[in-house]
Length: 166
Image (cartoon, rainbow, N blue to C red; front, side, top):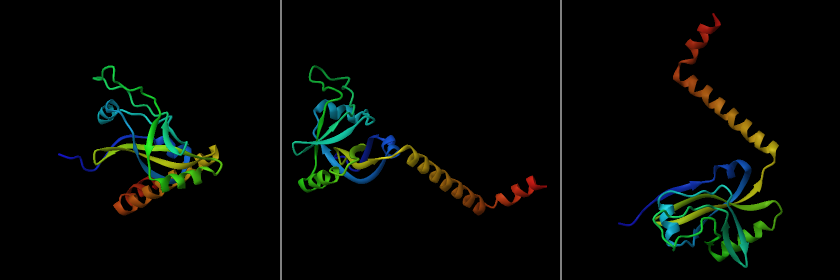
């Protein structure tokens, strides 16, 4: 039976905090057999990962796929560079966007899509410390507004606030 759908293996949550995401691309990956088996067990880390263009090819570096426990001497090295598969026109777009200073390629998530390993990479620009603080403030303000609105629709806010006022 063929796999259908999307099964997420790993996500890089810190990337969305540290970078402002401009464009997102889905890429295939060139993997060995033991890497695929290790990924099927749901083991991978994207924390230190980044992508780079070398000699007209896209490479993913710094991600950690641990060795397959049942593997023998054919096992892979956990932090090797892996080639990414992307259409030529998308690669040219990526190269053009990377020419801007301050942009980089970061992996956002690693998943299986219809049985094939895929990685989602993003053209991103690094955030400054004050940008991160602003993002946190706006997110907390949105949550507070949502809380107040939900209290208003549930009808509980009126009775509770009257009790405390008296």
